[in-house]
Length: 295
Image (tube, rainbow, N blue to C red; front, side, top):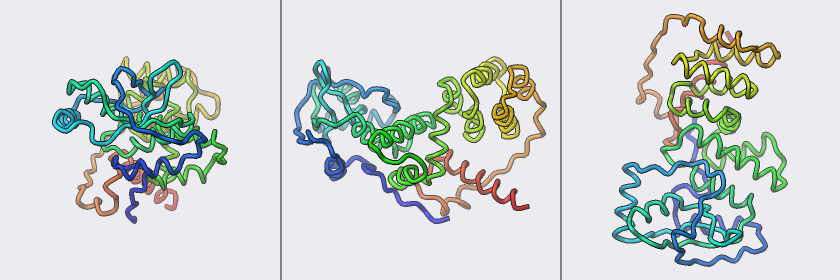
């Protein structure tokens, strides 16, 4: 399997990345300017899917801002009623607050909703610490924005998104499907109590059936096998799923677990560094499914 190049629009935030973003915009009011904005005037992007976490990386960012200030401006657009909506720079704003700063530099530009959404996603999607729920919601938001811009929805749009983020079209599609899970189930996936592929199967259920699944998982602290999630998906597709059937499927005795350990040094050369553990697992499952179908 060939390694996939990292082709994100922004990737690691660099000044040249901002130039590329500005040139890609079709906004009529495209003229931008840099200002030193009050932190109190900077507001979060609507439905921003990415966490801002006080972790070790945040501590490093805070210390850097204390010493040198914000070296790369954030990106924002004017907000109705005053202030600015942050498109890129939520972490830098938070770090500036922790560092005791009152302002930070931002590039102001009149982006449309769709342009702003695409830039917001592209400037964050390649971070190493992204949760499955964050990636799922972000890809869904970008896909919808591309559709609003008049691009034909479907496979080609998904392929383009994959090329830009350095992931396969199938991986992007699976994350978009995963975004259909309820917030409760997405949280369970994030906590690794529900596998990615099992969550993908359950994402095809309607909201009521998903509520049954999440309630049973929370009440009984049970796990879900790929066999069980496939059954749930099949019953749901046929319109035969009831709470009783969900409970019966999830209470099935699990087959004796067989543990297989794959050493990372044996497979690492097949995957680019941009692949997350969830993506590698998804690809391995996909290849096994294809192999099994030929037996």
